[in-house]
Length: 215
Image (cartoon, rainbow, N blue to C red; front, side, top):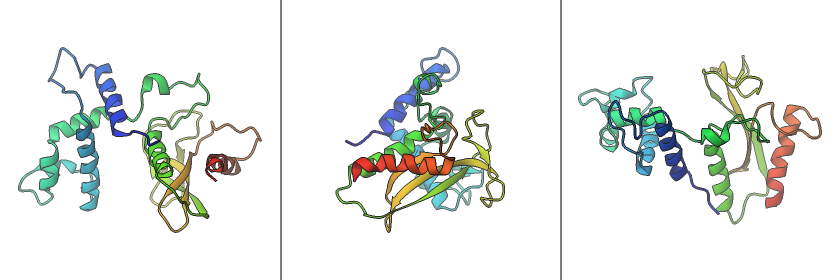
């Protein structure tokens, strides 16, 4: 029972490109429909750039022949113009059905939740024997944009996370001794809380409810 990723992201991205007038529009440059392999190459560029040490905001130099940062694998995988088009339209969700508080339970992290959901679900689906012990912790990533108001998704982290002043957090459970994710919960204020628990214990309850059916 594996879940799809790139095929769904391709549909979401093409839908968004159509909604802003790029795909099927009558003006500006022609925009070709996004294909699955192009998104794989897009992600590959990001991973490759990081493996080479990062470009510190000058990713375009990976395509510049003669530059010290030029990389032939990136250059041959996708053109820079197409990379920018995909960057503008890359979507991990369908905004028309995901971004509404009217349908409970509302998840303010819906714009990036697909990455976690597919990774964890497919790991569990492909597992025959899991570790009998689990370890959990929160992972933090920086985000300097604007979060949705009154959700607690984006917060100022102060001195708790060195080098990160604003960001989002996700609590995850892994097998002890192996890098295999088993469950996750995005940290925000809108989680169901029938027992009126504090945010930390309530997240633990939610994680236990996720893994209980697998035991």
